[in-house]
Image (cartoon, rainbow, N blue to C red):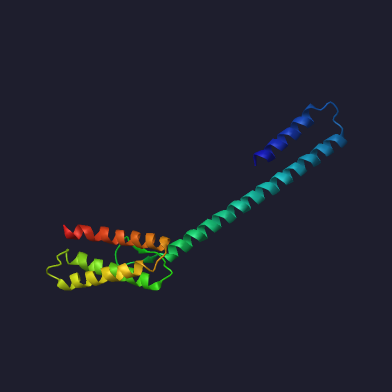
Length: 156
């Protein structure tokens, strides 16, 4: 936009200060101004189209990442997508166990079934971690930390 205005001002200045104000020179200057304006408009349109395309791509990528994360039984904890569906199922099951644990106020003595289930889930989790690649282990540990941080206040 600045280029368009600048071009128009330059052409205007040339027309106003020229020694000979003939029709032919004025017509040439006007044509040059029109060409410069058209070129600037085309460049601005191309830049706007590129920017819009980049925004759309970034939005689609963010939407895909958000869609890949699955909500868990615990508020504020989302389970990302894993190649192994058993890992996702395990994390959902562990989140449900954590919700029950929090509801029991962390009193495992009163509810021995939670203690047994917690032990079984821990063993199952250790086995599943062995099947994951390095990135999968990081995601798994991150989700487990989030779940366990929600469980920690219930033990106090």
